[in-house]
Length: 307
Ligand code: SF4
Ligand code: ZN
Image (cartoon, rainbow, N blue to C red):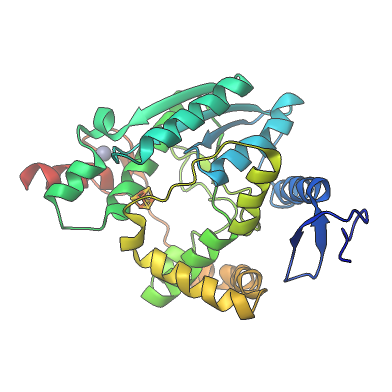
């Protein structure tokens, strides 16, 4: 009979193919929490007194981040708040917003819901119905980053925590290799080094946790999460790369870890050669930090206005 590697219990909920370990529910939960708190210390993601703004979509990843960071919030080590961005994706986003609201209320933390409509006077659905210029994720990513950065400043946050997991991170690494975007690679890591104090530092506490384990954690902890997938996700190149890595992982269970470790070793070398230093000024339209006269969000908005 297969038993928990740690406590010997007979009800095993996970067998980690990459390490050969098996865990019962309690040992799995405890192990995941300890691993993430250890990574937070190792990569110096959070310092005592930080106010961490969780980018809370209501999906399994951000809900897990919230749950883990809550242990630091409850012990008064950090202050914590959350922001949920409503891109305006009909039939998809509404549930996520409700779930995010419920979690924030349950924990008694400050929580803002910010819509694309209020910020840019349009929704992602409207953009996609009228424009074929770029993929949905390109607009979505740029607009979301703009909102997150502004909210973090308005809410007095010192860090923004996002739910990127091991699958997301290896996808980003591989995607940028495949597309030859070496400069983008220099910005991948557990923590964004702030190019300017106008940007709030972003941290990824789940960077070394596989997506499957994030889903299992939410289930094991009984946390309500928004499991539906975004209707625009399958259109993206990221989605194709994700499928490819998943397929490889079946016969090579350590492939995501080795991709990440290899990249982390290479990164200082790539950074030395390719990282671009540029002055960050302010966008003449919206006043947000930008390397150009117009930030990318305002550039997209002006393109959409003329279409
Ligand atoms: Fe936005 Fe793309 Fe994510 Fe959908 S899949 S929420 S469009 S980034
Ligand atoms: Zn702007």
